[in-house]
Picture 1 (spheres, rainbow, N blue to C red):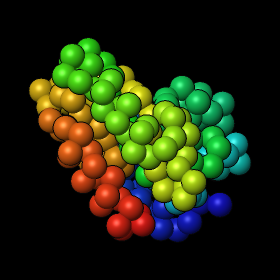
Picture 2 (picture 1 turned 45 degrees about the vertical axis):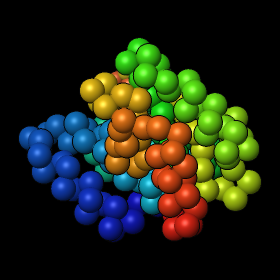
Picture 3 (picture 1 turned 180 degrees about the vertical axis):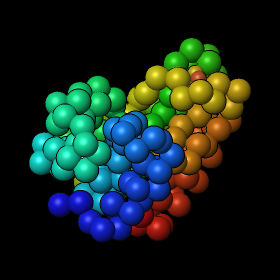
Length: 161
Ligand code: FES
């Protein structure tokens, strides 16, 4: 069930659009609800989002299943989205992925045994000038090196976030 707090957050997005186009906020609404639900969506929540935004359930379902940033099974608290598109790849993202897999002891797409971290390879995140880069929640980390990645992982583990 979508909480009052989440509805308030969704409202702050729907207010940006004409009253009859609340569905324009569907991506943010799904993100808000997913975060509140332990980083995971399910068909009931997606339908609730659709109802709240006055849009057909199938349309919300299409959005939730098209983009990789929505999870449909329990996921780690922190998802490291590392770009492996051309600029990042030319600047060593493949090595960073291998480094992450090695230091976390899991393959891309798997969750660490403590449930804290998962690594996903994603397409261009629009920060090519800072390649190689990755995203955790809404934060971008750019010009990465193995040392920087280690520090970021250490900080995630320290915060138990
Ligand atoms: S190629 Fe990595 S951010 Fe664009």
